[in-house]
Image (tube, rainbow, N blue to C red; front, top):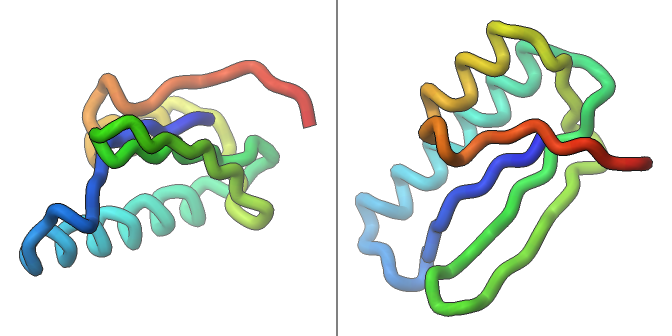
Length: 87
């Protein structure tokens, strides 16, 4: 499962930083609500060309209809995708 969202903390005001932290907490709660074997990957972009792909060592989830509905509800439908990969 790959999650992609452009977030640039250096450019955000305090309210936006709080929003990012809340969103990350909610993302974690969704992933923890559907434990499974699929690793969570987060793609980071600062909007200025800096990009990183982070793969969690501890957060894994089950791929089911509920999780696949909850994640796009939080992040936007264009920000979540299933990605075939190897361990």
